[in-house]
Length: 212
Image (cartoon, rainbow, N blue to C red; front, side):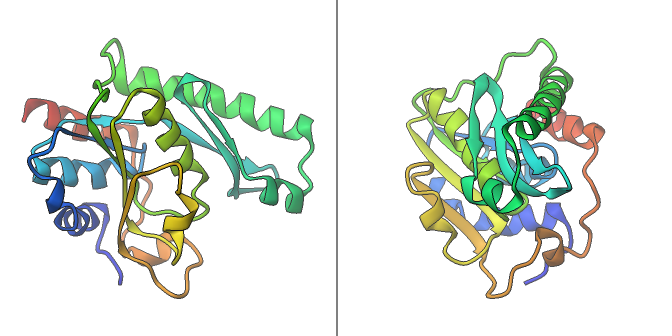
């Protein structure tokens, strides 16, 4: 299955989440690409929309390959298998983490300003991204939301590799995926338009949801 763009993917994903309608739900998009998807889900479920800010820790010589992720509140998730295969030293990992921590803090300021995060305590939190490859970023997001007191976590994405649910045992209570293709190389192969989402688009999604 190929999606036209993130908005269309969000509408397809929202249709798979109808069983959550009527629950006390908050929808959390992973910036930046997950937010347009999450905006469509939030609109369909008539739920508040917020961001859960995380940053992938990319292998130094191959940044697209995730060796872990960091998130708000000091959350850190590492993929020891990728780190070992890449031969990444503790010093190199530390340098990458410091750089990404700085960018994470910038994004939190950019997206929220002085606004506090939406309260997830005791609620069903739907964590949304535009797809899952290694899963480390989404795992970090789920850990953040769990630490914030969510009663239930639903990880929801348009596309992910087969068997992804087993990778999220202990992280999410439910995993919802529109398509799990047999052959999976990169998330972008399943979108006609996979252009980078801008900060302005993230802010627009959040503003529209707040006004709704």
